[in-house]
Image (cartoon, rainbow, N blue to C red; front, side):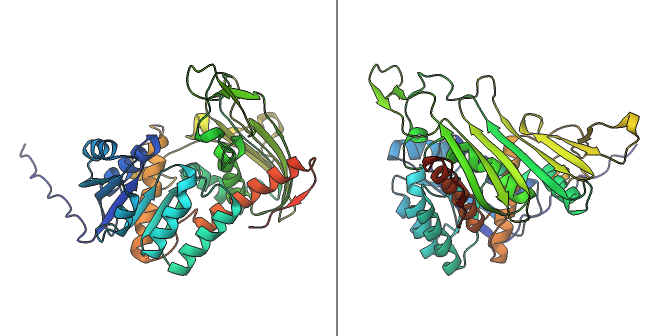
Length: 387
């Protein structure tokens, strides 16, 4: 048998999209991995090029740039934003720095990829939204879980009437990383932008909005399980906790649907319970991130003796799953969702448009977060959501 000649590799796009990454912690590394991987999986019009990395000091930035494959490093994020080599600024810095970095990047005409939450408060989020809209730059907020192909499939099923008219939504994001009362204070427990609802509740709210629609008003209640935490790991000095460990709420969607939501970062035994159930007049859909490659569908038109949730398994029939694997049942993972985000953003940058889950969407999520907090402070009074 004569061996076939090797295929010539597809030449990379002639256009380069210069990436500047600010912050090299866990999420920064996820962003770097996504930009390194995306060109080999998606037929993009531009090739990401890892140009600059900025971090808290020169040694940290230099080490991270070397490990992650960036050409240059700096301890001054402004130098990165102002560099003509950078076309797209990825922000994984602490929440309080999101606004000044994003405003500077928008003024410099750079595309922006920002970790959630967009900003510590709604006023800052609105300023960021207005800045990118005025500058006309591509922008995206990293609500990564909405990029799951099965979430798009769920949205399609709802739009096609597979479960009839939507009648209810029940959502939860529960994890256990703050279940230990000795877990110390960090940026997560800082009153500026901290708390369970802002930290993880934004994810379930983003899913609720994508699947059911805008939220008009809310009723919320919050609780703090551990009133004090150590100021540092192993410290005996305690400082009061001023943020929520859990917030639960009632959501009144614009379309008339009534829903409930829970955010809880001290949920013992739960590692990633980002889940929802959507009820309709003719069926229901259920999902949990703990089994992120499965979607459950219930249909009332099944024979009575065969009714029950049916498992839909992720596969190439659910784009862009096929970009990663040609066979169903082999499963996508958390970092694959980041690659999908990166592909969407590079395409948006090339076309000069906002990406999916843009600053406007993140601003609406932040408005819902603040309305729930306001309701909780006011004795669970009904509160409007005003993006």
